[in-house]
Amino acid sequence: MILSITKYNQLNLNQKGEILFSKGNYIDYRIEYNKYKIALYSLGNFYVEVFYDVHNNEIKRINALENEQDWHGYLDSINLEYLMR
Image: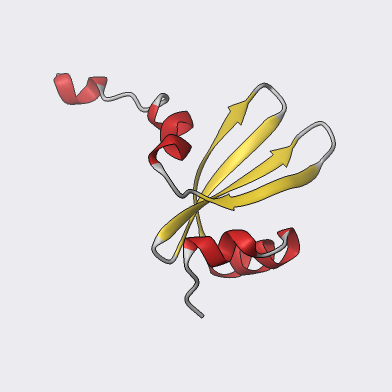
C-alpha cells in the first residue's frame, strides 16, 4: 500500500503506528525540551516523526514531515565541520 503524506497524516495515531512500525525504517532521534524523544523514520518516499513523551511513557503524536520548516530541528543539529578538514 502506497500512501501520500497527506493521506498518512489523516490516519489516526494507531493506524499511523501500525504502518510505520511494520514498514518504516528508523533513522535517528533528537530530544526536545527534555520531555520528548522525537524519532525520525523513513516510510516509502517520505519521513515521519514519532513524538514520545519520556515522562509519561507514551507516544503523543506521529506525523509525516510535509514542508521545509518541519526539518529545522534536524538541520540545526547537523555538524558539517568534518567536511572542512
